[in-house]
Each structure stands twice: as structure tokens, then as C-alpha cells.
Length: 319
Image 1 (tube, rainbow, N blue to C red):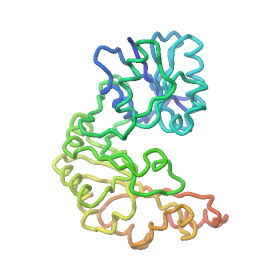
Image 2 (cartoon, rainbow, N blue to C red):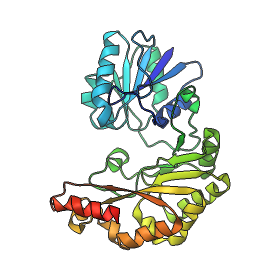
Image 3 (cartoon, rainbow, N blue to C red):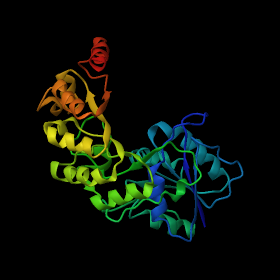
Image 4 (spheres, one colour):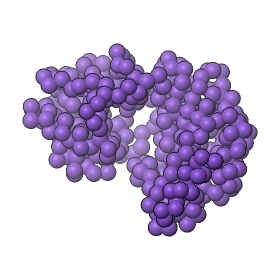
């Protein structure tokens, strides 16, 4: 049996800085060794018109859904079944099933093996969903799926899934609920070693799980002598020593969701805790004193926003 993973692109041009799609390395690690598996990343390469395969598997975001549906419709016309997973099919399974034979809702661990067995028998079920959130222990991505592909120099590694917060604009809580899981720190270290990369992006939606767990991760990263980047909630700046350790462990940049400079807009976004413990200026100073560059993100369109909200945010960012 042959399974072809496809990562759809949003436009026709090829990308020069695409990062490895970690989800397919995870799926490869869950796939029995007797299965022939390959990856086509449309950001890097065209999809062969005469592709011979027994199953197409795609991960679909909302911004790639239109293209994913085009690809799926074409393969199904050829009689090749298609399974879709990811955020968009999880939230809109009925829509996805107009274009796919099966949808995996939520995490693939715990159900991917069943998808493969059903595909072998030619009896895919419409929807697969794990009865519980699977443990992340012994989860080691198989990056051999990326061999020969010209990805950017940054490796992707995951420590945890889920987030402690429930911001109204964010899909994470809708996907994971209030479930929060971490991989064993030693597994993360081994994963980084196996990646062979000297610059890592920790893909967690919020790396700051709690002080104890986060400190253990940072301390374990120190001996690796790598550079790394992440996404983290601003409340980590409540602990300047932890931010200093973050830098010593190799962090060079962090994405912070400032979202808004207006407290009423932050309340609407359920993110008023952003300024609960200290001002933005004070938090930024702690990161800058540690030598960590900040990548700031902002949300516009709240009921209290005006045209001047854009100018205020630009002035803030420049300052």
C-alpha cells in the first residue's frame, strides 16, 4: 500500500523559505513500516499529474482549504480516496466531507492506525476522532519524510499542545478545549538532536506552560548550544530570572501577542490579563534586557477600535 501526504499551497508560485510541515513527520512515525509513504509539498514542487497512490492524506488549514478541496476533487475523480485532517476539517467536517472520503478530527495519534487499516480494506469511515486526548510520551517525529526537500534552515519541534488561556479570537481552545499536554523534556532534547538543526522553532502555541515545567525545559536546552525561537504569553515577563534563563538556553526571538493597546478591546478579546501584572513597556524591557528580540502581533476589528487604533499600534511598534 502507498500513502501520499500532500501539503497544499495557497498560490501557484514555489516558496524559497518553507519550513518542514511537522505534522507529516508525526504521521510518518505512526505509519507501519510496510507502508510506502511519500510527501508532496506543493510549496516546493508540483503535484505529478500521473501520481500513482492508494491514499491521499492532507492537513488543511482554513487558508489552504480552497486549494486542498481542488486537489482532493481531482484525485477522487481518478478513484483515489482522500483523507483530510487539521484545524479546518476538525471545525467543519461536513464541509470537508463534500471533498474527502474521510476526516480526522483533532489529533491523529490514536486514530491514524485505524485509518490505515480501514484504507487497506477499502472501508474508510467518514469521521475518525480519538475518544480522549492521547499522551505525548514516546512521540518522536520521523523526519526522514523530508529527505531531499529544500526546506529552510530552521527545524520545528513541539513541546506541548494546548494553551492555558481562552482568547476569543484564537482557535487553540476550540481545538483542544482546556486540555494541556507536554512531552517529556528528555524527549524534546532528543528530538532536537535528531533534527540536526542548529536553529529551532518551538511551535507551541504558548511555550509558557508553568514556571516549573518551563524552567525544566530551558535548563535542559542550555547544554545543546542551539539558537531557538518561540511563541509565548507575555506573563512570562513576571519572572525576569526565567526570561534570563530563556536567553541563556538559546532563545533569540519570541512572538508575543500584544493584540491591542486598548483595555476595552483586550477585554473583548478575553485577553485583559495581558496588562494585569505589568505594562507592555515594562514587559518589553525585561525581554530586551535579556537580549531577546520580540515579534509583536496585533488584532484589529474590536467594537472599541477606530481608524486611529492602527496609527497607535504602528507608533507603539516603532517605539
